[in-house]
Amino acid sequence: MSSVLHHPGYRRLFTAQVIALVGTGLATVALSLLAYDIAGADAGSVLGTALTIKMVAYVALAPLISALAHRLPPRPLLVGTDLVRALAALALPFVTAVWQVYVLILVLQAASATFTPAFQSLIPHLLPTEDAYTRALSLSRLAYDLEVIVSPVLAAALLTHFRYDWLFLGTVAGFLGSAWLVLTTALPRVPAPTSAPAPGAASAADPPDLLARATRGTRIFLATPRLRALLALTLSIAAGGAVVMVHTIVYVRDHLGRASSDVPVALGAYGAGSILAALLIPRLLRRTGEQSVMLPAAFASAGLLLALAALASAGPRGGWAWPALLTLWWALGAAESVIMTPTGRLVRRSASPADLNAAFAAQFSLAHGCWLLTYPLAGWLGTAAGLAAAAWVLGAVALGAALAAKRLWPAPDPAQLPYVHTTLTRNHPHLTDAEHVGTGWRHSHDFVIDDLHDRWPLHPRRS
Image 1 (tube, rainbow, N blue to C red):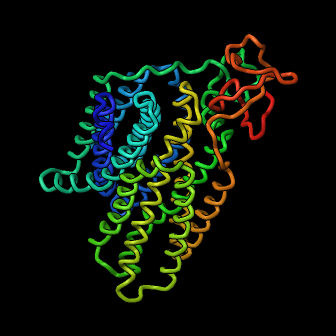
Image 2 (cartoon, rainbow, N blue to C red; image 1 turned 90 degrees about the vertical axis):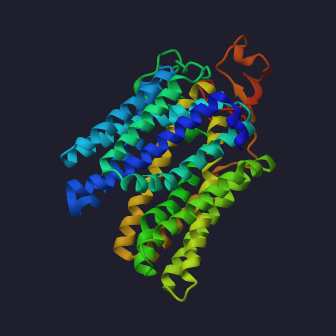
Image 3 (tube, one colour; image 1 turned 30 degrees about the vertical axis):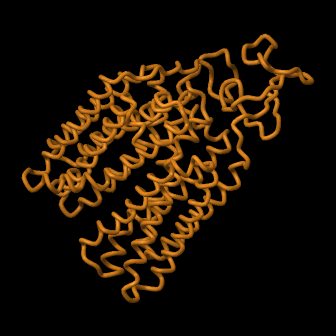
């Protein structure tokens, strides 16, 4: 996996990602302490609202900002968003009211909603081969998992010597370091965004409006069977992840009656499963396709949630309940990583180079939409009816999502598909290898939804 780090451009961008993630982790710890300073006993409500603002920014703003910035070169876009994030983090220690926290969190997360899809869309251009790109996706997944572990440990070490507001300076340093690395890295040339309307628009001659650009990636997602299946798979792991993040402390402390120090152990088991799967997935994907590993992982996630529901309903009986929980959390982390790691491969395969940014922005937004649904569902159900009920319901959600993904994802799913064009003239450059059939021209090629192909050819379709 580390062989892709021999590529100097990717190595610098990956380093930028890692230090920005560590900085974000420090901000998460510092923000919780800041919320307690400002709101006291209401700190949980403040943090809950801040996290909701984060998710809303990711869901609503990622496609819109991507559309507004669609003609900006990637370097100034990435550097600019890092600087905005640094300024927002720098201002956080000086807030004196809760509403100021919310405003700064909105600014910071809006910048992150711009940075992440643009960063993700660069990597396929930098590492064009499938194997190298898969290794890069696994490293990226590892970076996210390690951030969950490393940032709290680093924050705890720093807090023994400094006040919590100094942690925000670590966040600022992370974003500035990321900006410097992007600024000094030779970035690949990215094709200019298409000037034609989004798929399904009435006329290819008119320039696209903001709404068409903002919804272009979502239209590509909804028109592509494997991407619709990916959305269902994301919902399945969001159901499991929400249970882990929301209910670990409740289950460990109240249900099992264990010490607070066991909470990070349980979360560590979840992260360990994810890390191990991320390490193994490149080798596995060389032997088989994404479909044959992602679909079983979704069904496994649903089964694990239902097993948790049965475990919680039975109550803590004997010493086996604790190792059973650790095993379930480890397996849920592995299932999540098996689904999440190959996601970029599916997005890259399903969009033209010029539409990669829009497609990644849509994936970023829709994925967080799944979490925006499952987080409050897990919290509300757990509070109203208990952990067992929440696990039963979210297990059912995960199972339904896995079944939907299996139905939506065609098997086989070849890259090349035949298509019949009836609106293009014979001298159109796209038809150089086409044959005349009836009233149109038919040819086969690696198929994606774009301005010339506005629907998926389940059977040879007419355009």
